[in-house]
Length: 194
Image (cartoon, rainbow, N blue to C red; front, side):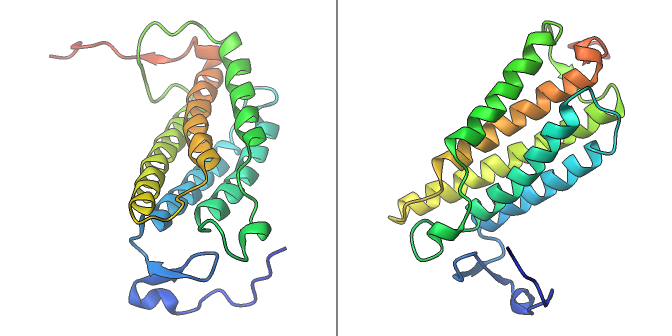
């Protein structure tokens, strides 16, 4: 377990922070941006959890929130080194679980015949916000991965990158599920207000 006896370290006062392996990087480093956005998405999912949700979604949402801490740890820890064995890396099983949730939700949703606007009920709107934050994190993670590969460093865990992609998809289908299984989705009407 993690034990935090002191919240402030003053390392960040100069625009630097430490990754989980102790290496120091700029706060603007893409890894820091990626796990910061995961933290933001997780906070957004915490708001979703306060809303009335379809049966079973709350339990899965709690599991996803815990996974987001695994994901943040994974993104904050460069590959190799003594920390490798102590960090909960995202696994193929975690990605597969999201895929199962996506498939289960999709099976009961109204067919998608148009792009949908973020909205409908409050839970759906919050899930759409979470989805967009996860997509940002995914872009930041891919930037970090690409830069590290270009520097000859192993890059990020490929499963973490897949998890981010599936998590945004899950937020999308969960938003539709919260909108009365898609029946209350707000449909895009191209050019309707020209």
